[in-house]
Image (cartoon, rainbow, N blue to C red; front, top):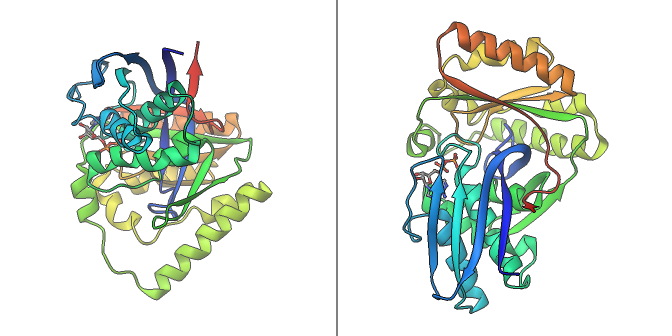
Length: 307
Ligand code: ADP
């Protein structure tokens, strides 16, 4: 095999109670990438469409992630990478993670799969380190594994794939404003009270249980965050009102996607999700705020090979 075309999905990290440890993969939001072997023994980003992003391979997350993989594989094989960006960088739905995860998935395949999908996570995390200064796994893991991922620990890295209840739908609202990852990290408090920690780990454990038992109501009651959301939500226009609208209209839960500005409403069933989508859309349109909206199933496969 000389080349591979793939769909590299968007992902929603944190999911309220799972800051830096939980994420899920979206079905119909994502980039396309074409990765081809070259004889030059170098990694080249040969084309990027849809966004202005660095073409230098050491400044593009895809190049950095592939370098990390090739180093461990002790391979000098060169690759050309084309990226058709459909996920906006800085949107909070794993734009950088899609490129890092997509690139290492395809290169691994073209090298004859020396690594398992789980082993690819650490290479893709090097792309995240470049994008945000923090090698977090809660976007790249669900992009690679599909479904819901739980980062059990970072050192040593241990990531678990969790089940995806089939009727879950995600409504993603992306206000077209820029929030710098640096700013959204800066507003977070570094210390947590025991009371808040108990609340958070109770909810996280219940959320994991709800995924196994397909208990949608429990899932909704668990999508709570008293540690990060109260501070980060200040950066998102009308966050409290959006949340109230989503919950009043039957969403299971509502929160910030990654470091924002995107927000998500998790819903049970297509009809409910369509209704929530319409209400959120109407509210933001009235406020004259530019936005994008997505409605997606949970993608249980992760990166997909395209013919
Ligand atoms: P998101 O949460 O949407 O992924 P990030 O802030 O994590 O956004 O990542 C975006 C940053 O990564 C931007 O500074 C962007 O220039 C940089 N970057 C480098 N290469 C890529 C790439 N291939 N795709 C997306 N972002 C990239």
